[in-house]
Length: 141
Image (cartoon, rainbow, N blue to C red):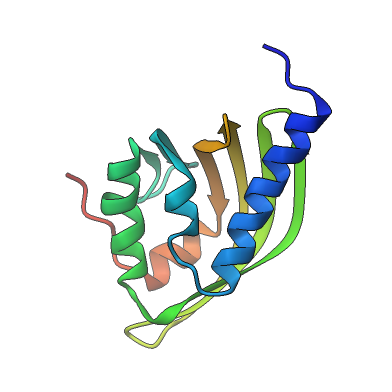
C-alpha cells in the first residue's frame, strides 16, 4: 500500500490538530482520534514500559491513571512535527504539577501511526527517570 504526499499531509494535520486541541484544554482530543485497535507503546525497560492496547486499555489503564496524578491539569507544547507516509513524529514538552506538589516537566518524542484518519499506534519516548521519581506506578491488570 502506497501513501502519497496528500496522505502524509493529512496525517500530519490530524496530529497537529490533536495537539492544538490539547494545548487549549481538550484532554479528550487524543483518545477521540484513536482507532479501537489503538496501542500505546512506552519504549524502554522501566516500570511503565510495555504495550497498552486496545484503545480501552490505553485510555482506562494508562491515560486516566496518569492524568489522575496531576493537581491542576496537564499542558503540552509541540516543538516539532515531521511526517512521512503513515508515520507522524512529534517532539513535545509537557507541564504539570503532581498532587504531591512535584514539578513534572517532561520531554517527549511520539511516533504515531495513522490509518484512515485514525491513530492506530503511538510509540512514546520520554524522561523515564522523571516518571519513576515523581509519579506513582501504573497498576497493571
